[in-house]
Image (cartoon, rainbow, N blue to C red; front, top):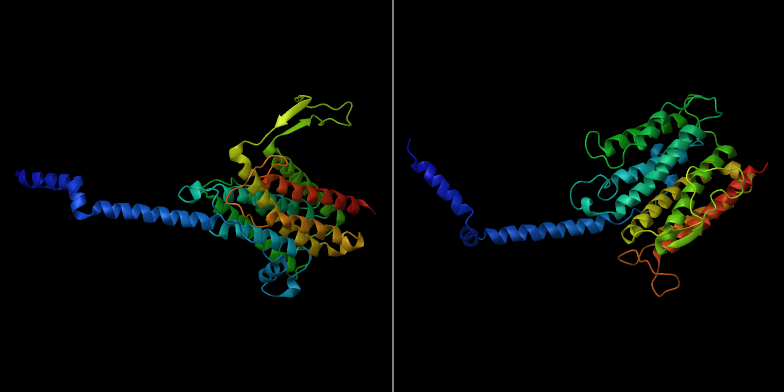
Length: 351
């Protein structure tokens, strides 16, 4: 066997990886230009994808879902359309769904994934309320067949990227919601129901009230807070699994401040659309309780949470210092909306 062809091949390979050969042929410049171009493109996409989505028109979205046929817009279709709009935005916004990305630039972004988790939390609450409250007349009534699918689909792991991916599971939930929307507006009596009653609305608002209260507390921890243990206030014989210290300190780690901020921004973004839809579907009930204006005021308070952010980063000024504190501003808006929801629930409880 002649060894000369093999020796020639080895020599060529050595020359290929010889730095002098690369310099002579300009390959180093080519590689450098490719890396720089790649980094520039990654940065551009990261900036574009980091912009939070704008709000959408709930009425217009419901009309689109109904194929521009207003006769199909019955009680419940606006709320279902709002859920569909939130889910569609999560999957189809700029950059798509980023929480499970394993490649740049999504791998390096954290603001939008936290925004997505906040919006997803509200979507899960809404789909569960549709399944357990709005579509059922009484506790002994049968669950809707499509909502039985949609609810658990949106509860799937938000960061799964492989077999099955989060997007594919959430898409199944969207399809189930679309089927429910179509059945609400068709002419088949009893095939798809939505009950716009005061008790159903109160049940959903109770969940939103707790979510907003939790977010307001977590946002306020950005500057640190000392609080007394009031967990068992008013319950002399009450017990808890792990008694807490009489006074505790809470402070959000510096690197997590923007995470909480964008989670709150995502949740309130989704809640705005849900409340706008509920204001339409429950309008007769709200007018009867003279509570429609109260719900509109809540929506207005929440809309302030979507104001543009003029700083390149979430600032964390202390107290009345010279630097802004975005977390406390967001907590203020959320707390006011939360207090208004408590008042609204009180109005709905009256006969």
